[in-house]
Image (tube, rainbow, N blue to C red; front, top):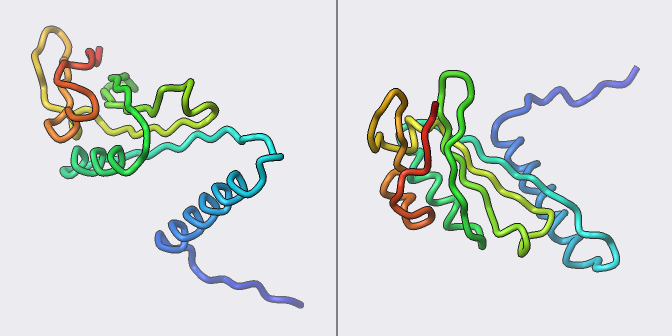
Length: 134
């Protein structure tokens, strides 16, 4: 009878494993131009009081432009940042998403709330409201 390692999976081991696989893929892409470029879709889901600062830190750390939008899921609105432009970063997309209530301030109201990205995010997205969460 053999035994297996029953070490608990912690947030730190998960982060370490995720970083290792992403580094290995990056190394493979750089080292093997004969292998087709893989598609990748990386998503960060954030929430809480420091969400605007965290979103801004992630966006600033990555070498791409950002497009912002507001979407609706159930009763909640979401601020979505998506890397671009697609023509430059073919096959690779990074998304940063957070509840609009955590990442935006109300910019006006009708029968719905219009969301304005928090000040720390306007350098990436501009100052105009992104849309309505209906």
